[in-house]
Length: 433
View 1 (cartoon, rainbow, N blue to C red):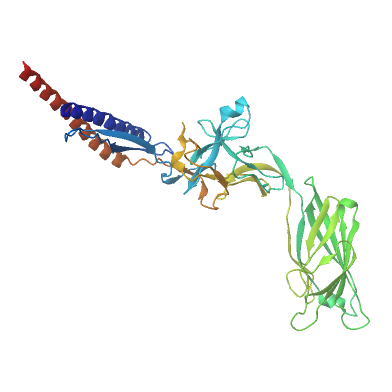
View 2: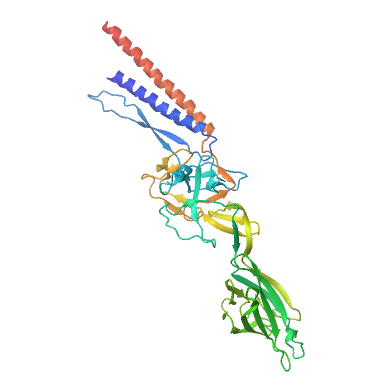
């Protein structure tokens, strides 16, 4: 019994070391595979209770585990849609073949890196056929609230390089100085003209004309102006008229003291803005808060448009798209404008090593991995997304070669035990003869 148990234990040792050698060979073969997670073999001893004080060798059993939570280092690349996850989290992807079949929502797979490029339909796809998934943004660039514990809201990230877009103007910030001397009793009272361009809902350029007319007093200075706003898209129709009074005190001289509405939207002293309705919709015009110099002022003797800032842009062609650290896919246009078109979340699980390993360095959640959750990149326990980057293989070739030498010696030793047991059995047979 003892001799036969030695034989069984050594055979088990051969099998266990063969399993370990298989994991080593897999790791070395994928030492240059981006995103590869190494697999590790663990040995567990088997114990057989002896009868009557004798001892029987139990042998060994090998188990394997892929260390999905241990990634490789990040290296830079030249492709803006080469993506890698830094620290914890996984990118959601799907097989292009699942989209072609169109039998429902594609199965979400997870990976940590990929070299994505647009295919014939503009989808971001890897050479191996993995398409990047994300939440689509609204036309204004905001991302709606999607459920975070399901992949139902995810869609293939699609970039239309021939897409045209224009952003309508919704706000204008005015920084203009009005000449204080023009409100003197002996002034001519000539109005000051200013034209501000804006873009309508169709990307067409229009203008809001502002005419500042001073109030001329009988003597002294009135420090008062009337501003009229007209819209070129409505044949220069009057869209707002306001009386502006400026402060003459030592500490706050030249700042707005009061704004009275004659027509148009009311002035909000909290924000320092008023709303006017142009042909394409309301526009918020910021003229500054009372007592501050962040908008309209009345100083000295010169009319000076110091700063005019507005949002919106004319119609332009999409020229490029990049993914930022927070997973937002931003499209850039030849007008200089940019807009969010998708958000790519990062998927996290309680036990990443419990996922099922698939081809192409992808993984599928399972009951052992726990329930997944979709986080904003850089939020919660997840890391961020690095563009122009790939994640290298987690294989340490030097360490694998060392393990291979140890495995070879252990295998040879087990084979030697089998050879010795065979010789001992032959001696036993000779005794009987």
